[in-house]
Amino acid sequence: MPNVSSDELATVLLVGDDAHTFERTQTLISDAGIAQVIVLTDSRATLPFLKQNTVSLIVLDMTADVDRTELLARICREHPDVQVIVETASCDVEIAVNCMKTGAVDYMVRPIEPSRLLAAIENALNFNYTQQEVSSLKEYLINDRLVHSEAFAAIKTTSRKMRSIFQYTEIVARSPHAILITGETGVGKELFARAIHRISNVRGQFVSINVAGLDDAMFSDTLFGHKKGAFTGADQYRDGLISKAAMGTLFLDEIGDLNELSQVKLLRLLQEREYYPVGVDLVKTSSARIVMATNVDLQERIREGRFRRDLYYRLCTHQIHIPALRNRREDIPLLFESFVKEAALYFGRDIPASSPEVLKALAAYDYPGNVRELQARVSDAVARHGDGLLTLDDFPGLCAAAPPQSPDSFTMPSAGIYSLYGRLPTFREIEDYLIVEALKISEGNYAVAASILGVTRQTISKRLKSIDFASCG
Image (cartoon, rainbow, N blue to C red):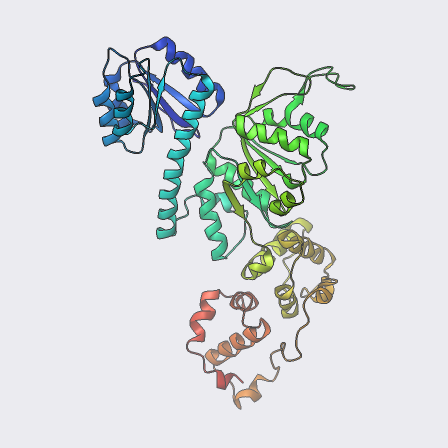
């Protein structure tokens, strides 16, 4: 009995006596790159096979002289998560109706057009995947589950909002559909694309290209390649990036800037998994997983007549929107600390501490360039820094760019702490005082206050319940 290995593709099981017919079907499905195919010529082996292997779809040959109605009924009853397409040479309406009532998702009479068969298989697999996705989503939400946390290690965050996005990304990462990642410049769209690549467990490599500014000729040549002599200067054959990403992931960044001709070719690639290298008349089939990203509003581009509506609908099956850094300010202290360490290591310096003024200004800034801008500012500050604390002098333009603060919004802790109590305070009183002052500096932001004091946000929350604010001034 054949054994199905764990793989990124769904598994289709062909069950019937006509090995010659199924051989052609197996080749058709495999060449389309939509599933791996297993053939069983002994229908009695079907149920034992299903007990030992994961199968998404069965194509069951219901010949005139072999009644497999009972087998169909048992498959649908014992394995309700497996879709079944019935193939037969008989056009008997009663048989077709009975098969559909039993649980088959489609009934096809031979001879069957290859395109019709592939469409039926893709529809059944998509339906099966949608059911699995809904089930997974429920489990993730109920159990706050995140299985592949290591895939998101490069994305520094403490945000609950971002964790929810991680969970959704895990669910759709293995989807057969394209994935669209949206968000402003610098939020980390490529990091999410790489996380999707790792989670999906595809065998091929991750290939990335920014398509902004490419005219149609350059887009076609870069993605699809060309044959020798296809145009002036094409003195040798060239494989395109879509070929380089075979059985892997192709990441197309800034697809909102594609011209109309390139959009048509991208739509064909997504719908048919087919493309033509420049100068070649024979169609090629792609096995690459497509992930795309944009920092523009595609619906606005549609209204302006600059983006195809049919392409947009093909893209928006799975959409991951990454919030701007100003909408998750709780991540700023963690990102700042990480970037300071990274820059210090790069420049061969000790990790500098930071003044409260720097942390306050960073927390108030709106970051039009998002995480990428914060990283650049920190790297520049560490590069220009001399001795002592990082100060606002190391961040030119940061104060001018930050929203204005009221005169009472920032007060440094008093140097004469003895005078506040009229005596030498206890350690507990000093800790309480520092927490209150840190919260004043950070304008009530627990994460920033915790970063200033070098403690966790949870420590701040717990201690606030027992602090006597009157005694802290």
